[in-house]
Structure formats: C-alpha cells, structure tokens
Amino acid sequence: MEYIIVGLASYLMGSIPFGLILTKIFLKKDIREIGSGNIGATNALRTGNKLIGYSTLILDIAKAIIPVIYTKINFPELIYIASLSAFLGHVFPVWLKFKGGKGVATYVGILFSINILLGIIFAVCWGVIFLISKYSSLSSIIGSLSIPVYLLITGQSNGVIFFGIMFILIFFTHRENIKRLKNKEESKTKIY
Image (cartoon, rainbow, N blue to C red):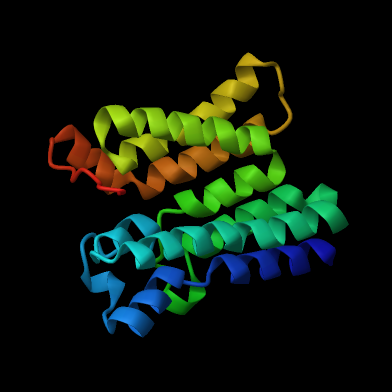
C-alpha cells in the first residue's frame, strides 16, 4: 500500500506543469504554442523571459527533490519508485493529456536527491557538452548516459539498471531532437 501512495504522490508532484503555469500567469501565453511546444525549462527560455525560464528550471527540479527526499527519509526502499513516478509525472502529466516535458530538470532533481555526486557528474558532463556544442538536447542525452556509465566503471552495480532505464526514457523524450541533430536542423540554446 505504501508504494502506491508514494508512487501516486510523487507522480502528482512531478506532473505540475510549472512552465505552462508561469507563462500563463506572467506572459498571458500558452507555452505549448511557443518554440518546440514543450512545457519544460528550455522552451520556457524561448519565451524571451529569462526569469520565467530559470524559474521553470528551479521549480521542475524542486518538484522531484521534494517527493524523493521525503521518500528517502521515510521509505528509503521506495526511493526508485518515487523517482520514476516524479519523472513520469513530468513527462506524462495527467492534467495535459499526458503530453509533458522531456524530464531533464526533474531528472536533475532526482540525481541530487539520491546522491549529490551523481548530480554533480551530470551537471559537469552537461556543461562540458553544452560549452562545446551549444545544444541543450545533446548535453542532456550525454549527461544522462554518463550516470549509468559512471556507475558501471566504478563498480557500483546498485542503481545501474534504474539509471539505465532513466537514460532510455530521456533518449525517448528527445527522439525528435535526435532527428534534428542528425539532419543538422536542431536549434542551439542560449542560456545566458
């Protein structure tokens, strides 16, 4: 019974569409009609309002941190259920007919909540790839791959399957970006 409550609460927290809410309140626009149509932080930056973009990023990270940390403290054996549920809530929110974001900011919240070192590894990898390529999508894909690879290299088999699944999900949510990258049509991202 606890795993159902943890999973549902984490899913509902993860499904809060902060990008949509912030653009509706402050810009009187629907983020789904801007840029890529995605509700996440990268597309929120495309509104031209950096405060909305970075607020979306912080809130999308926080909506994973809150349920995952709570679960880590109270039900540590259910941490992967809480993590996956929060991620799936962002990617497939019930409020938006299951059409959500790509889950990277939420994934960052999960990483920092489970193990700060994993969050740092992702952030460094993302930053290096972004500095080289200027593609947020490519940085996110390689950054998410870096976690199961790091765990395998260091012999930490605990979590490899979970983070491998998370990489597959992030790869899946970026499938259109991958096509655009292959065709040299992907937009570069300005984060400053």
